Image (cartoon, rainbow, N blue to C red):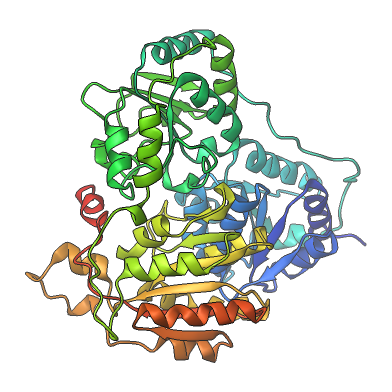
Amino acid sequence: MTTVAQQIGALLGQLGVGHSFGVVGSGNFHLTNALRDAGVPFTATRHEGGAATMADAYARMSGKVAAVSLHQGCGLTNAATGIGEAAKSDSPVLVLAAEASRGAVHSNFAMDQDGFATSLGAKAHRVHTPETAVADTLRAYRTVLRERSTVVLNLPLDVQDAPAVGSIAELAVEAAPAQRPDQRSLAQLVELLQAAERPVFLAGRGGRNAKSEITALAQQSGALLATSAVAKGLFNDDAFNLGISGGFSSPLTAELITHADLIVAFGSALNMWTMRGGKLIGANTKVVQVDTDDAAIGAHRPVTLGVVADAAATATDVMARLSKDQPRRYRTDNIRERIATGARWDQTETPDIGVAGQLVDPREVTKRLNELLPDERVVAIDSGNFMGYPSQYLDVPDEFGFCFTQAFQSIGLGLYTTLGSAFAQPDRLPVLGTGDGGFLMAIHELETAVRHRIPLVVLVYNDAAYSAEIHHFGDDHDLDTVVFPDTDIASIARGFGAEAITVKDVADLNYVTQWLDSSPTAPLVIDAKIANDGGSWWLAEAFQGH
C-alpha cells in the first residue's frame, strides 16, 4: 500500500525539489524517507532552526526550490526564525510540517500551525484529505515556485498515514511567465533615462535573474551599476560596477550614487540599509522602482515612477525603445579609472588598530584571508558589528558567491547559511564571517559540517562581547550583560572534529595555506582575537534607523 506521505514525497521529487533539510521525528519520518526515495537529497541537521536557514540559503544560491522537513508542533516552532528569514526574503522554500491528526486537540503537539506560519510571514497551506493530497501539494509547490514565496504545508498525521488516492504521473509545475511593464510606465522610464546625465542602476534580490539585461541596458544608457547587499557580485564583470550600495558602501561608491540624478532600482526595496536612510539619494534625484510586487513600490520611500513588472522584461523592453546612440553619460574614462582605483574598501586607506601579538585589526585579518583563499568561493555572513568587514573585504566570483541572510536581523544564522550555500555550490569553498556570539549560538551545526566532510572556513571575529550593543549604548550604561569572558573557540571547534587556529597577529593566518594544500575534508575555524574598532563604519548609520 502506498500512503499519502509516500505519494507526496514522490510527487515533490518529480516536481524538482533540489534538496531537503530537517530533523526527523515520528511525524515526518515516512515523508522524509519518501523524499529520499524520490531522489531528493536530505541533510539531517542538529536543530530545526539550522534546517530552515540551510534550506533558505540553498534556495538562494542554487535557484531551486528547497524543502524543510519538520516534526509536528515543536519541530515547527524550533524552525521559526529560519522560516521568518526565508519569508521576509521571498525565498522559494517549502516547509513540510507534520501536524497533529485532525480532531486531536488534546495532543501535546497540537497548535495553530496555520496561524503560526502566517505570523512569520509565510503562506499557510494544508493537505486536507487523501483525496485532495495531490492537488493540495501541487498548489503549495506552485505558490513557492511562481510567487517565490515561503510556504508552510501542514500535513496531518492521519492524512499522511492514509492510503494514497489517484496518480502523480506526468504532473508538473512551470514557472510563471515574466510580467512585462505596461506601455505608459515603459514610456515614462524611457523618457527619464533619455533626460538623465548621471544614471545609476541598483539591483536587489529581484534583479538577480536579470543580470545580462540590466547590464546591457546600463551600457546602452550610460548608467553605473550597484547592488543591494543580497545581490553582491552580480555586476562583477562590468568596469562601471560600484559594488554594494548602502551602509557597506565605500566612500567613492557613496559619492557616485549620491551624485546620480536618476536611480533605477530593479527588484530592490530601497530600504534604510540600501539607501543609508535616504542619505544616498540626492535632493533632486529622480527614483524609479521596478518590482513585481505592487505593494513594494514606494513602501520605504517616495518614488518618481513605479513599474510593476519583472526586472529582465523591463530592461529588455526599455532597450528596444531607447536610442542606440545614447551618450556615455556617467560611463566616462575618468569615472572608470576612479572606480578601478577607489570603489573597494581595501583601496581606502585606514589605520591599523591591531595590538602586536595580542589583537588583530578586523580589516587587516579579513584582507589577508581574502588573499589566501581561492577565488571560487561562496561567502556567508552572520550579523553583528563585524559584518561589514567580510561583506566588503572578501571577494566573491558572482551573485551565487554571496549569501546574506539578514532580513530578520538575527544573529546566529551564519553557520547555517554557510552550510546551505555549500550544498548549493559544492564546487566552491564555503567561507563564513561571524562574531563570537553568533557562532556560539549556532555551533551545534559544526558537527553537521564535520559529518558531511565539508571543508568550510569560519572566520570568527572574537571580541568576547555583543559589540554592536557595546558601541551603540556606550560607556554611560552598565554593559555587563553584553560582555563575556574570553572563550577558547578554537579548542571547542576541535572538540567537534574541526581544525582550528587562534589568530592574534595577521601572520598567524599563514596556516591557512597549509590547510588548503592538505586537501581538507573538515572545517577550519579561525578564532581571530580582534581589536576594538570603536564601532564599525556602518554601525552608526544602522542604529539611526532603529
